[in-house]
Image (cartoon, rainbow, N blue to C red; front, side, top):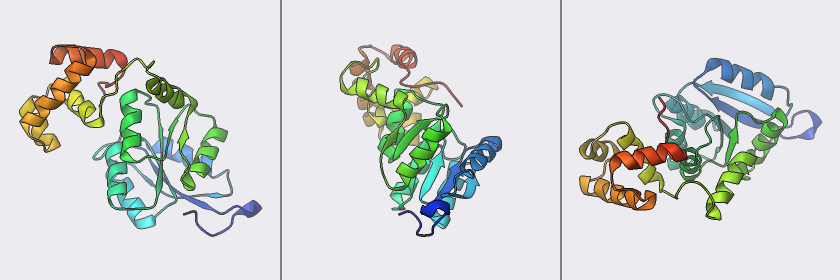
Amino acid sequence: MVNDCSGDGGRRVISIVLADDHSMVRSGLEGLLATQHDFSVLGGAATGQEAVDLVTTLKPDVLLCDLRMPILDGVAAIREIKRRGLATNVLVLTTYDTDADILRAIEAGATGYLLKEAASSELFRAVRATAIGESVLSPAVTSRLVGRARGTAPSPMLSSREIEVLDMVAKGAGNKHIARDLRISEATVKTHLMHIFEKLSVDGRTSAVTIALERGIIRLTR
């Protein structure tokens, strides 16, 4: 719920926490948001865990969150915030626009997904919409999701768990390692892999990774 204090122009003030592992990005965003009288930045986090802790303590209306952060990434942070039942709505602000990134964030509970290339006016509108729980997607993201829904997208609809498994395969993890890290059985890992191979129309791990990288389902990043 948007805070009940009023800023200039009679608008209620929207409280915001910023989460990005680059201090210059956080500073730039804070300065940009400060130009709007109805925005109040309460704090900044450099890791996903710090973001969760700040949201838990400060209870902002909006968490403006990047995806790639240390300790907990953005998706894991969103999941934890939702698991704790916190009312803060999350607007993802990132440079990553692959199907895998979008799907993970939305399934984790993000209210909106905006690319950093967005104009400041678009960002302001997105923050205001996110504060009241309205779904916000950048035009590029909307186009990708519509394409998927119409069956014209370049990648198949892998589940978020299948994407996690495939991402670990791409990093060289074996079934036992994947099972341990995801806290599932090796048999379940094998089942996920069979489904992945079927959806990608491949017959092995190497081919699956190659196709997934080509189609942007996964990406090799830090």
